[in-house]
Amino acid sequence: MKKIILLIFITSLTSCNSFFELSTDKELSKKINLEYLKEKKPIDLTKITDFDWDNYIVIGPYQIPEEVGKKYNVDLSNISEYQTADDSKLTLVFIKNKKSIKICAVQAEFKENKLLKFS
Image 1 (cartoon, one colour):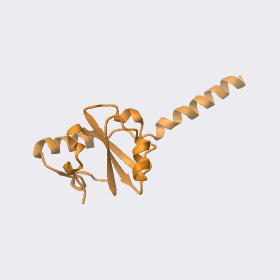
Image 2 (cartoon, helix red, strand yellow):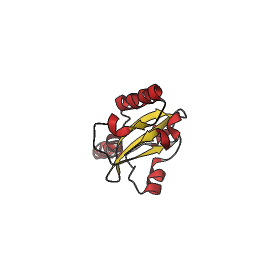
Image 3 (spheres, one colour):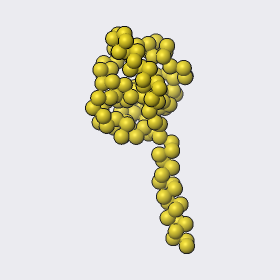
Image 4 (spheres, helix red, strand yellow):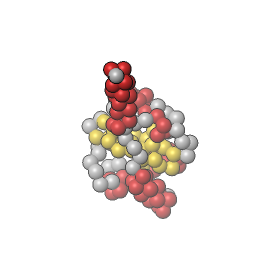
């Protein structure tokens, strides 16, 4: 009985990590992608978003979020690597106080940061 309880406890602890991971905001992703397709010019993210953020990072396909976070001194530990495993999408990460708060998937055409504006 003790082994079963211990096994359940360990399983619960290891699965809890996925509860704290960010998932893609599909509505925001759709809004950003549609705005870009409509205008084909830089998008002002401050006009599209309705939450508080102070910076953003674009993570390319197959990049490891934690390594990108180390490069910019930002905590991206709550982003799973599977989020960046699509050749046609980039992961746009919104940052607040050096911590990732929201992510969305944008078309790979956004690769140049010139297509996203932040004032």
